[in-house]
Length: 394
Image 1 (cartoon, rainbow, N blue to C red):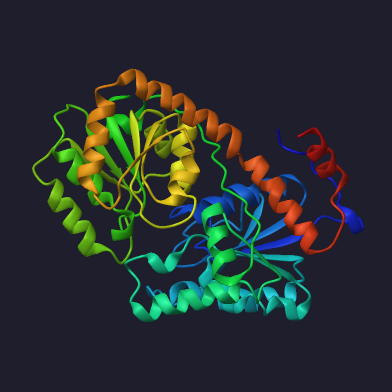
Image 2 (spheres, rainbow, N blue to C red):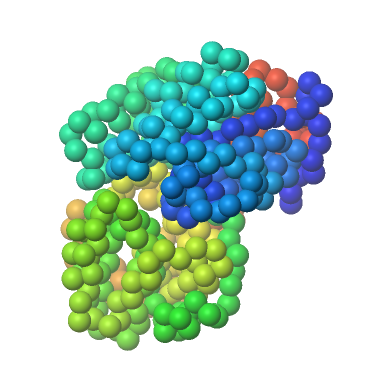
């Protein structure tokens, strides 16, 4: 249920800026999805929301999207400078505009989060996972990200994480415990249609991966494991990535000669939900990061889940899915897939468990409630009556 718009305390609702991502409509990663899902719900609750977008990435040419105002600004289109330069430019643009809250995403943006505080804007940073573990970063970048994690505990007004595992890391590493707010998993269930036809797929007859095709997301585990399977099912790899041409070429070379392996590139919107709704098994191979939106959305789609056994992934699935040994990689994943492909009743049972967990633990309405509570507590204001009533009912 969407909460009705209402005027908040002090005679108005909040003016909120969302910064540090590529922008919306979402067309890249989980943070963009979070901005789109969270932002539109905040608008529905009466808040004024502005999303800062990277002009080279967002081609949508309307000034607003789902009620959110879009500000498109340039940056340096470079692997190492893209995020930080855009966040700095966006912050400078935001300074005179009187936002109550500046919500930033990604720990690497922490160095700029003190600037809005100079003009009275409270800043909050979602630190994401432990990004320095990603293979794409050279040593100097890893050191910077680790230093930025420390700054996340000092420079913004408040910070948070989407994973209890990452929450424990900050507590142990910096003696600082951020609040935990997960991602939502609300999805559209789409019957077989144009997208399955386009990629020559049958409902319930394929294993699905969704994610950026970068080394630390370990899609090669699935490609290598699937090649050794004796099955007429297909393996669908959804995603792409900037600055990862060599890895993607290597991945496709591993799949060469096996027509069962299908690379779709990026698929968003209804097509993405169609692929998710009709998958037999969803495999999350990522070895780093916090809560992966594609994973919680696959749970909501009702897929049987198999995931790389990182603490963060296992935290997400709880008892509603299966892990494989990420250190062993493809061999362990292959054993798990052989087991499940031979047990369709187990696949159906765990698909239902995954959907129930997603619909109980990971909902965007509950996530929005939690962000609102954090906004008002950071501003040291009382919660609006409508939110107090919702919490009392829940």
